[in-house]
Each structure stands twice: as structure tokens, then as C-alpha cells.
Image 1 (cartoon, rainbow, N blue to C red):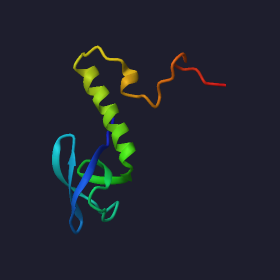
Image 2: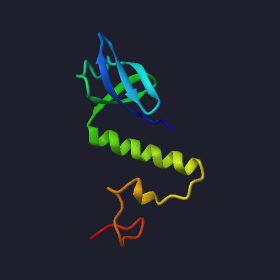
Image 3: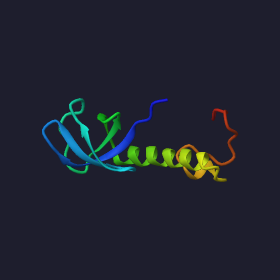
Length: 98
């Protein structure tokens, strides 16, 4: 499985950018996305920015990654806490609202 990591641009350079993500700071290639302003969010995979994303998308992806981390640690979690945009009280999983 491939997982893109949200990273926020700290400093744009010629073909790379210094970014901050969940594992700290990293210099990533920005040839695919082109130069981005400080504060912009990108989805990074294998050291390269693949897509420009919104701050809201970055938060949702980070929440999903937090949920995966918690499950992998064996924590007893309420998965709906990590995916409030998908949680619908009273709706059974796998059903479609009419």
C-alpha cells in the first residue's frame, strides 16, 4: 500500500522545498507540483511532492494516519473520533442513505 504524507512548505527552493510533516522536517522534490508558497500543503510520497492539497485535506489525512497508528498499537479506540466526516449516528456500516 502506498501512503502519501501531508507536509507543509516551510521554505521553497529552486526545485525542492523544506517541509514539515508528522516525522519532522524534510527536503522534498517539488518538480511535479512546481514552486509553492510558504504555508502551502502538499502530499508527499518517496521524497517528492505529488499533489497540492488544502489544509483541511491535510488534517483529514493526518487524522486517518493517527487512527491507523492507534489501531497498530492495539489501542481501544472509537474509530468515529478519527473520521467525523464519515461518521453518521444511527446508520449501519455499508448502507446507503436513500
